[in-house]
Image 1: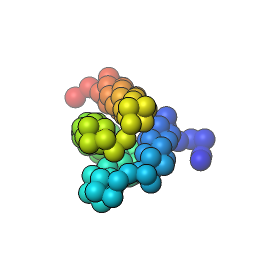
Image 2 (image 1 turned 135 degrees about the vertical axis):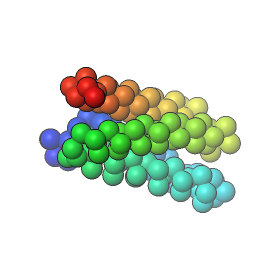
Image 3 (image 1 turned 60 degrees about the vertical axis):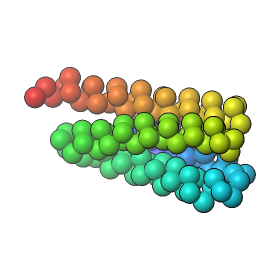
Length: 119
């Protein structure tokens, strides 16, 4: 990985790798629908983070807001995975912790942009 990647990119990349390693052992019923939805959403967040790194301020803020919304949705879906017993408590806590940190990073990035560029 390149050294000039943002911490949010690194955390999102690591979240996806961790999630993927867990998803291999999901029950078939969880893997086909819920698992695929989480995977798609996580990859979308990763893509948006990559794009946001190089965007102008207005486009960057739109992407960061979308990232924040997607992270919130991922939290709900990961909780659903846990409640359907597709992941154990330890894995749930690790995934949720990463999502919490990704959310804080995104919020901090949004706040930083707004402080530097008040409208």
